[in-house]
Image: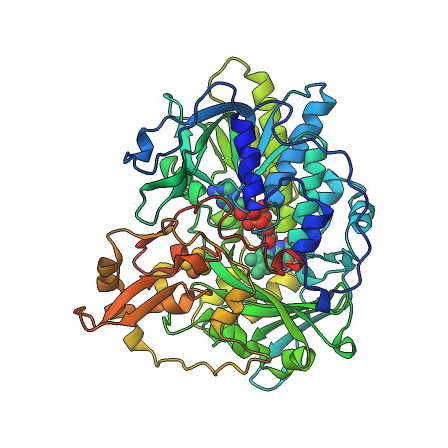
Length: 636
Ligand SMILES: Cc1cc2nc3c(=O)[nH]c(=O)nc-3n(C[C@H](O)[C@H](O)[C@H](O)COP(=O)(O)OP(=O)(O)OC[C@H]3O[C@@H](n4cnc5c(N)ncnc54)[C@H](O)[C@@H]3O)c2cc1C
Ligand code: SF4
């Protein structure tokens, strides 16, 4: 069977068609009992079938394992395919770059220009998690009739933003605060980013982008001159021990003139490339927050379509940065969430516990009461802003979107900037490839210039001092006061840039310096235990695949270096119950470190916050960590 045939067979096996069909859409949306009214899907437009225009590889041979056979997977030759641009990550940034590239190439009469997108989720949108209030600036530039198109193809899709509310919370009351201009949402839309991304995927395929969901880019490939020459997808069918099983299939190589990394916040290949080319040498460290989110169907009398609320204060202590949100959208749907800055020093803090506590505050509880929680998810987001943007180009490629860190923190918005960065990289990549037809390696100098000349730069520069102003001894109070002055008076014009505190993991202090925090027991109406929440993410990893969460020298060594000082911080920072310290008398510490990697929801917090930086997050097998069987992808 041809490699293309095997690819199709593989996708069918996963139920992971690259076509985003009506049936597929319905099967991944919310259950019928709670399903809001929605318009029927518009008939499918003609689409390009991924890989049909050109086979993935005509010559190379893929090796399947014999059950009895024992060999080193790395010794097996990989198939390779040549493309013009390889994009890793089918999120808003990657798909915007892909669409822009094909728009330019098609206008240029260069329809054979090959752009591929590899996405680790089983389908486009499956691994996307966000609020999301969309500022439509970038999408209006990319697809001018987007709103009409999207509203035709999705149930009441983009809810126009209504009233903005900003509150400071104490334990039982809420004090109105003036919403800074950066947080005004007039002209914006509340959307499901997962659905928006699926729609972008359809638009990309229509104009000839080849999209391969279910494929993790696991390794960067380099040319002899040191430039990036593409990526390799991960091997499939390895057992827990890392040895090939009967289902083993070697990964594939994609060689590209330009490789764009669009992996989202804290991308694993981006981390490697940043290190190799020292991309962070002239910028501040990146800092992060963890966003935890639920989607509820609320009682109609509690629903205020389009209302957008944000809060600061309770339940977070004055030294912990963060805030909550609640967006009313669609039909009786409410997106509620909490972002917790990962620069907290107290290792007893559990962001999941803080989120559950927040829902019990009267401002939130009054809306949720009598409703039903449909979905849960969590994802890290960049908080470093302007001063943490690295060099974005490297020989052979570039970082685009959240993996470079273009999120506007006071706005809590990064979709528009991520998309725009992808579009700028696309323009630079097409020009560079056309102008360097013979050169082996392409460098996207123009991308860096375009970023600085675009609206991304002044937007992020203006708010650069707000986030670091929360890191003074005055904590949240100092931050609110300073940010108020910045927002209404200084508007980013002060002649200095505040630095960040350093890396988030490095500010964590020993547990014995703090009192242990006890979180309220779940009531199963408003608050839930972590495993119930994980069941609402639809997370699924193969039982027997190797763990993608790897302590450098094994589980026992990890426990020895982390546990005595931080008393199980991994168990508390992980929003999916992946890490556990289990009592075990046979161990010197009295506990055994356990990793339930099948629960992982790919939020990346462990890679950011582990105080000893001992856990490596590797891309799991493609299509695993599949969140689509839940309600999440329909509404997140
Ligand atoms: C809780 C929360 C709330 C937010 N609220 C808002 C908001 O209201 N408004 C707003 O504008 N923005 C918001 N954002 C930010 C917004 O979600 C991001 O800025 C945006 O999604 C970034 O797009 P991206 O394409 O760069 O990355 P992502 O959306 O993260 O997409 C990356 C994609 O790459 C895939 N991928 C990663 N690594 C690999 C690999 N090695 N191989 C193959 N595939 C890979 C992932 O599966 C994913 O599909 C929020 C973010 C969070 C976490
Ligand atoms: S294991 Fe790491 S990436 Fe996975 S859910 Fe837990 S903290 Fe997030």
